[in-house]
Length: 113
Image (cartoon, rainbow, N blue to C red; front, side, top):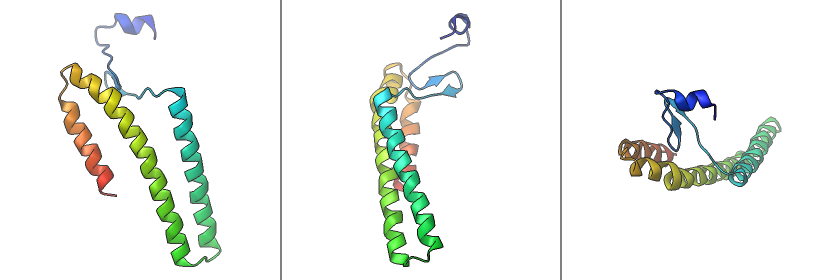
């Protein structure tokens, strides 16, 4: 981290945020896992595009879409677990209870799907 940031009185760091800039901090292993999953999902989406272009039977396409949705849900679960265990816990320990509202909104968004 740049020394000038540490001297800056506006600089405030917590688990997922640096004053108005929110970031995650996953281990390299977790990042690689997530990227690999997303690469597979990207390939599946391209595959569905090909199915549509080849006029594949609708039910078969819908089945593939369902598989992609399940795969995306798995990525979201991994991210949510890490967020709860690291970022949310740290912010609560620092007295930032607003993070609970943020998490509830996020969970509501995930449950709409």
